[in-house]
Image 1 (cartoon, protein in one colour):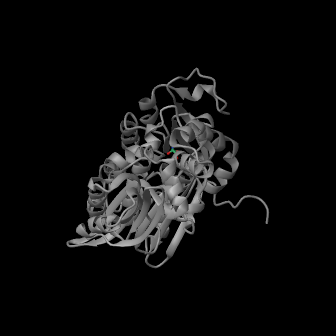
Image 2: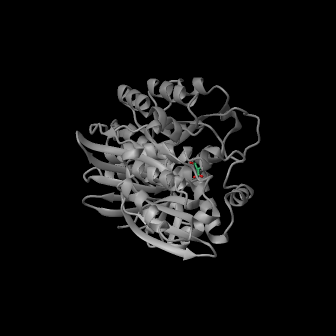
Image 3: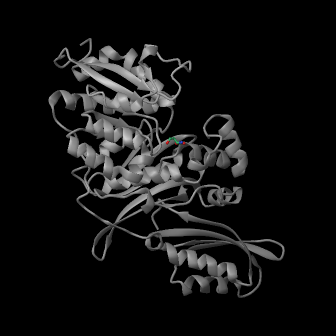
Length: 442
Ligand code: HSE
């Protein structure tokens, strides 16, 4: 069989307004233009860009569109009344939120890549879409090109997801991967990431975990049919991860990754949800350990399906545009059929479990005096906090020793208190590495 698979082509035009023409927006415009025939066949109507809102319309851009389409008046563009789909790729909270709300009120559906806005105030956007009877899709907001939100919202809607474990930030994965493969420290690896264009000049959003925390909130909301905002996500970045931590992980057959971890657990009054972002050791045998460089992956554990992994490029113009255009095609088909896609699903209304109550394991490396009774005093601190030790390894040096202790699963607060107690022991010279351990059977 040759030629595109066509449905009925209506002769109608599908009017698209683009907000932003940067790294992602320019690729959306390019693919929409270059692949217009295929997209027409798939949608059943010809997509046409009717305007592109940018801050600097005169700036030279390598985008195959009529320069007359560029405008600085984004509000006028989204409220002109004849736009079918607004694609928002400017990011940030404002003016993106006001523009999306105005677009929905004016009858347009929306495709957005705006993780920060969805994680902070998704509820307002979903309510506006519901009121307007329009769609809001956002596949590109988490893990770039990787189809993960639609699988959680639709494909897994008949299953019960218990855990989502993701590497959802490419910049930090690149840095940690470089630290692991070259022995470099954090600053050196960050510098290399900046030189290669993986990290921004101001890397705060990535290295401090803000970007991953927004994505964790979105993943937890969809996976568990409840509302989780970025304020509910415990966040720790990778700036304190040292070459010693990475070496310690290696010795244990592990690798360090910045993980977004979303869990559904039983609580006294019903199911509870936790969402956290922090560096953690995972065993080399875990599928996420093989996610190298700037790639992303999301590992999902659900009751019926078991373990699933979604892998691919989590950033970049064309990969992110791929996700945006997938949304655009779905939204466009819905417009033609005069139906709406899946809206927000928050019926479960789970309470948020505080970080101190989440259960994890700790790896602790300490320099201690090498003399009788030290190991007993260290073990006593664990016992005082009701934390069970899984393994202890000791390497002797001249007059001191390094102890590497891995705990069994315990409440995070108890583990943190244990580390605090160790720091106060006279026999402990230094706590050289503390890191959570995830993704491993006890
Ligand atoms: N800065 C992000 C990353 C991509 O490094 O993965 C956009 O979310």
